[in-house]
Length: 519
Image (cartoon, rainbow, N blue to C red; front, side, top):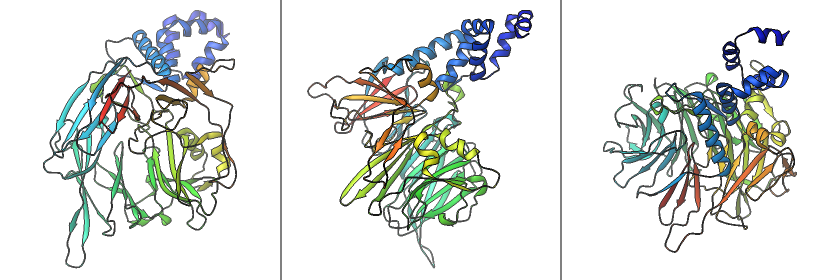
């Protein structure tokens, strides 16, 4: 019956119908019907739809570039990344400022005058030209910053100011909301476009972690143990506070979705069991609240540690946000889609006098699938066995920088070429956790090469040194390697690496040089 219906329908109508179904339905259709298989295989739009899904991409805005050309560009781009074959390189100097950021394909450095210099990184396959501009910021004593190119948003954190009061003194921090292209007040920001926050005077050493997700700006005010750290989330368009919490146990955070925030800390101070809490901004409020009293949605427990092992630092890295899209003015043919994001949770453990890091690689889908299984109003703590062994990879001493921390993008992780790998310290590695791509590209027969290593069906085991029991994890991934040429005498020696959608950036901190590799 299906074959008869397809025989009487015009081919163009069949293609239009198929273009609206999902990736899985397209693949299923091509497997159950010979005619549909032929249509799917020979039509550029349908092949492009499949390729977008497998690569974790989404289609760009309409332009003169048709589906066939977009499909070719996307396939060439994915092939280049899967072989780490960049199309061009460019060296640029590091400025004398001490701040940097890499977001949305824009690399920003502070200069010695307190201003910022921006560089839109080029793309060969997506047709993006390099563009450089700078902003002077004479009215802001800059302490830190963040940006979201999709919204033309620049978030500037000014150096804390001591405000003396009649009864009490306070340390005030102002957060300025600007246009990253003009430096002027952002037209969509709250009026006046400045968010103010008071921090504990005991926080003598203060650092910041800033993230933007859609209408939300979150700032982690890190006090390094001299006072409780604070996590505050604003709606930057209205100025309203959505979450205002503090605790010595708030160690790190990251947006999981626009509504959900992942917070790293301890489930219980006495037990010392590490935990990833999920806080729902729709259920939070603006009153300053101890984190112990915050009504979190759920929590994900780590395996129990030995009582003498102590976590001393915590970091969660992921980029970009789940619903991020490039600014429409870019006119790119395709860009990263809203699919699963890789989160790298790094915890430094102290054992006696030794401090060593352990990295947890987890996809957002691992966490969101379990969150979505909860009923209305249900609050739950997921034990390690319910999410960790099959949904993560836990690895000791993965090679990445702790200063140049933009080493993850989408489902990719880039290692530092100056790491501790004994086989070749100049080897650059990309670890790919894109599950659809792995299933499609993995050879049917077991295959291993010097340049590609498949971790599918194997197990990573951490012996009982930090955790009470052996920790075994099995999330599939592949490692793609490329050896960098030996540096000539007097040339930069790149020891760090960062990653964006179209570029790898190699860093030589000693001679203060960057090398931009373009795809």
